[in-house]
Image 1 (cartoon, one colour):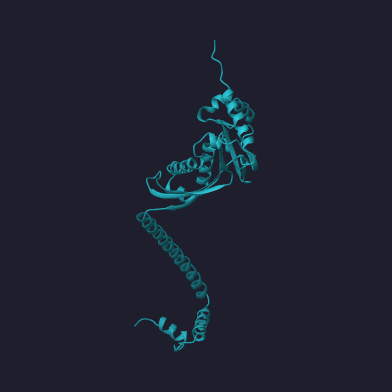
Image 2 (image 1 turned 90 degrees about the vertical axis):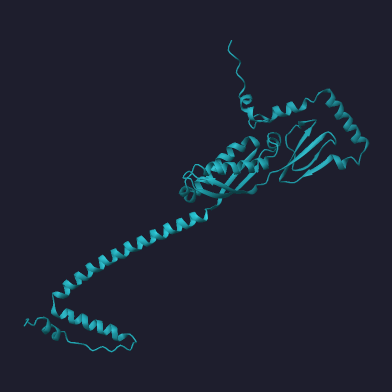
Length: 292
């Protein structure tokens, strides 16, 4: 005969005490079976409460805030209805154990992690993680300390993710790294009743020697680009001057007009330079004079 197939929820609960996918009603039905001894203890506790009224009300009535929920264990079992709150609720002293869970978003800094990148560069990276507990019952029953476990898992995940990236990718792709970490943390903490809302890579600190090398490389690259740009400018200027010389050479009076324009520009400035204009015809006679 073929082996009997196990239910789906039994296969999923191999890593947790309380599976988030199990119907809450089945948990409530299981919590009611406390046995004969449990029933006797409950009856005796209620009788003691009635006898000691109204002093016992100080121990029986509890209050939780709007952002809190109370998980009550009665003889080791979760009470019917799951987490209690917000507001007033009734407990049985000496029989019930209360665990309060804060549902607000928690923010914590991941300590700087020394990471060896894919291209063998050591960097120190820290991040900020935002998370909250969405299921108090699972957060209490499936993990000993949901907050501490989430913090340790965030530090480990940061090291694992950055170990698969190059230094250039870490510096330029922070958003994609943050999204990858958020997805990995959210999947890992889902059985704990924790929802990771956001992860941000805060700072990337490089070694001093690497910073100097990168600065020298960037400076050399800028100087090389500056020299190329200057050379291209000289090339374009020489071409423009050649074209201007060809235009001036077409008319003998163009050079004289340009000469007078230059004198006008120089004389407009407030300086002590004395300029003696020299007619160009005199120079032209010397330039075209036949050799002796």
